[in-house]
Image 1 (spheres, rainbow, N blue to C red):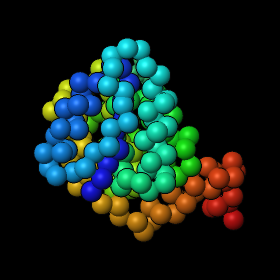
Image 2 (tube, rainbow, N blue to C red; image 1 turned 135 degrees about the vertical axis):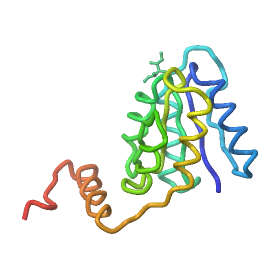
Image 3 (cartoon, protein in one colour; image 1 turned 60 degrees about the vertical axis):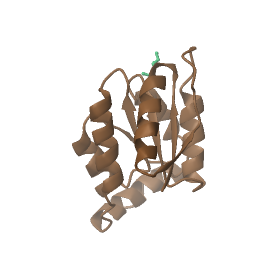
Image 4 (cartoon, rainbow, N blue to C red; image 1 turned 30 degrees about the vertical axis):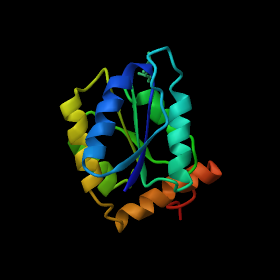
Length: 154
Ligand code: RB5
């Protein structure tokens, strides 16, 4: 498995710990930065990771900023991205099973490193269930591509 990881200036330490944690499990991790604590605009790393995921250069992505909100919003602007910000493992697991999320985000100012590891583990170990959930994802994709939602109206 190959992942991309990105962060802003407030999440440098957490990013490093998560990267090392994943590498210790044999997962390849591409770090798009930042590795500086100098003020950094999170859309840059959100966009970089999202593009790598959308182009299938990696299997999935992890994004960390202060809350996980801004960086996930930026990632979700890239076509094909379903990024979800989570502060606990249950939502992370369900976001994969039901929503087929391809990026998980969290906040270095919101959760601690052990919760972050738990979120990542639950998310990576979960599988998309398809079936009825695919109809809903197709609807999300329709909104993304056409800025309309006709599916389900008939
Ligand atoms: C940076 O101050 C902060 O706004 C950022 O890390 C993030 O929380 C944004 O959503």
